[in-house]
Amino acid sequence: MLTRRGFLAAAAATPFSIGSAPKTVPTTMPLKVLLDTDIGSDIDDAVALSYLLKKPNCNLLGVTTVTGDAVNRANLVKTLCEAAGKDIPIYPGVEKPLVIEQRQLSAAQAERLAGTPSSFPEGQAIDFMRTTIRQNPGEVTLLAVGPFTNIATLFKSDPQIPHLLKELVIMGGKFSDYPTPWGPTEWNAIVDPHATAIVFSSGVPIRAYGLDVTWQLSMTPDQVAKKFKGDKLLEIVLDWSSIWFQERELLHFHDPLAAAAIFNPGICEYKRGHVQVELEETELLGVTHFQSNQAGKVEAAESVNAERFFQEYFSVFSNHDSSSAGQTS
Picture 1 (tube, rainbow, N blue to C red):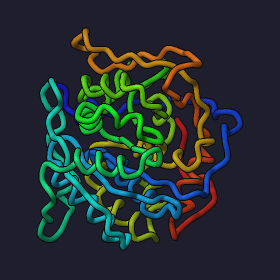
Picture 2: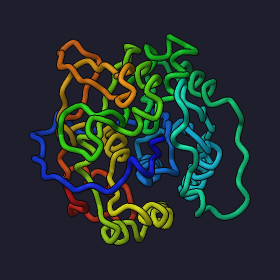
Picture 3: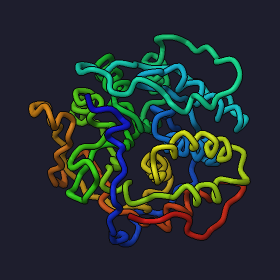
Picture 4: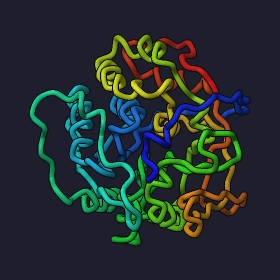
């Protein structure tokens, strides 16, 4: 069985070209956001949540967790929320994929948590998401940065929800042949391929940040240690990153790109089209096939301006340095 550890085996970096002029200007208007995350596996979820908690115009309405060990993932979320001085609703979500066996059983970074674990409402994540979206019709951006089990379950339980969202923003899939270590596959999409298919066939407008673009933003352990010091939230994430860097050489900013682009879409350039999800070939379950079409519901990032991204990301933290921070692949 393919595990996350196997999927995230080290791979060589590849040069890329920075995208052209931004599509739009950053927004300073308050935005209502729901976050669905598998925090605790890849460190970048915590990096993204830290940004959302510090972003002045982010009204974070709640956080749900997904895949195995959902309660420990919720405890990681609570640790960051408390450190930020914010009382955010947190709900552990669905742990098992819709059809296939679970590939992501545990949240390794929970090893770094101290104290007694908190308790959370059980089995209420989907109802919380549904109620929040219905109470704010056309206003909520749903940010999904983990496997899509919660989102698909939500859409199945209430088919009107996709039409009540302002937007669905995801980190998941791969939408070009840009070279990445695992061919056409991407972890969030393949962990629950049937959920991925439900999401892309829902008719909701989707802004998607695929592995082919997010792979182009990374930091070494030394860069992370330097840039994450001096801010309370980032120093917590820096501690958790010790688990991540035991087996990896880079932190890739997959989820933070999707989070930052909610407020500053011009970080990337985009292409519009349809996405079909592979559900036939066993070895390719969850692969996302992108087809360009101006009438399509999917707006997929096709390039990223790395300098602009890092400026946006670090601008919200107390140790902000306007210089470009990371490296491009």
